[in-house]
Length: 414
Image (tube, rainbow, N blue to C red; front, side):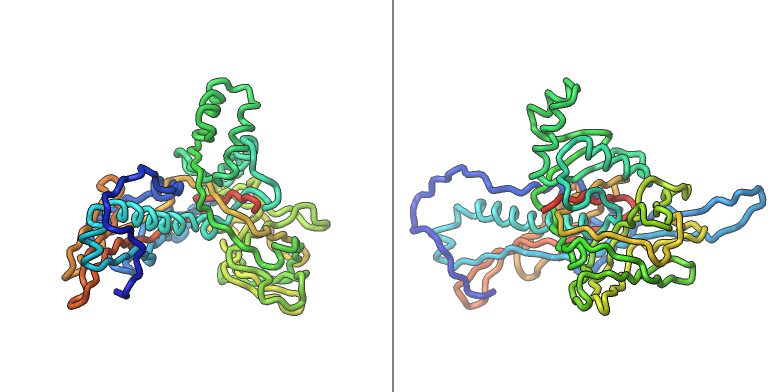
C-alpha cells in the first residue's frame, strides 16, 4: 500500500445527512445471464474461462437424395479477463477516532463506484458485439415507431422466440415515451404518463442506461465518405474476410477506419443488385441490408483502405451463407459517424460471469456471493507490518460475452 492523504473531519459526533448515492443505471448487470453450472461456486483467477454452446448450423438440399454435411459444434468462450478494485487506507488514529463508525458509508460508496466500473465495461458490448444495427448516427431515435421498426428488422433476420431486451439511452427515452402519448392506447398511455419509461413494448423489455458506450468513428465515418469496393480476400470456403475500398477522404490517413466502425452496403447503385442478409436459419433473403463492422483499425494509402470485417460474408451455398449476391468491384458502402450505442438482445445471450476470488491470505477476507445471480465481490482488510497504515480493498473479477447474431445495435447520435 502507498501512503495516502485523507481529508477527514475533526473528532466529533457525526450526523448522517441521509443523502442517497448518485447511482448509475446498472441495467446490464441486473439483466445479464449470470448462470453457469457450478462456475459461481468455484474460486477463479484472472484468465479463467467458461465455454457455452451456440446452436449448430445446417443447410437444406432440394432433393430426397441425402447430401451429408459436416456437423460442427459451435461454441463461444467467456474469459474472466477484467478486474477492478477500490482501495483506501487510514492510520490507526484516524480509524479509531474519526471513521470507525463511518465505515458503512465508505463501503457503500466504494461498492457503488466498483459496480459502475463493471456496468460500463459490460455495456461496452453494445459497441463491440452486434454487427447489425438500426439507425444512421444522424437521425434521432425518439419514437415508438422507430423502436417497432428496429424490432422488425431484428426479427426479420432471425430472433429467438423469447422476450427480448432493449437497452436505450436514458437521454433518448423521454422523447420516445412522449411519442407514445400521441397514440390511441389508453392503458399503455396511463402507464407511460405515470412512469415516463418505455417499459414493455412489442414483446421486448426496454431498459435505460446512462453508461452506454460512445464509439468514435474513423475519418470515413466522420466525413460521411461513400466508399467503393475495389477487391476482396476470401478464405478456403469463399467467405469474404477483408474488403478493399477506394474513395477515402484522404489519400493517406492513419485513422481512416477505426475498430468497430459499422458499414452498410448502399441500395440503388447503378448496375448492381441490392445487397441483403440471408435469414440466419433457412437462408432466405431477408429485408435487412448487408451490414458489417471493422474488427481492427485500418489506414488509408493511395486513397484505398483495406478493412477486416465481421462477420465473414459468404454467397457460396453452405451453412454459413449469409448474403444474396457476391461482393464485386463497384458496389458502395457508407460508414456510420461517431455515435452512442445501445442494443436489442434475444435468447438470453448476454453473459456475465463474476466468480469468487481466492482468499487474500494472510488478510481477513470476505467473499459475498448473490445466490440468485452468482455475482461475487471480495473485500479484505490489512495493515502494513510495522507501519501505521491500515487498508481496505473491495475488488471483483469478471468476464462478459455476447454472440453477435443474437444482438442488434441501436445507434444514437451524439
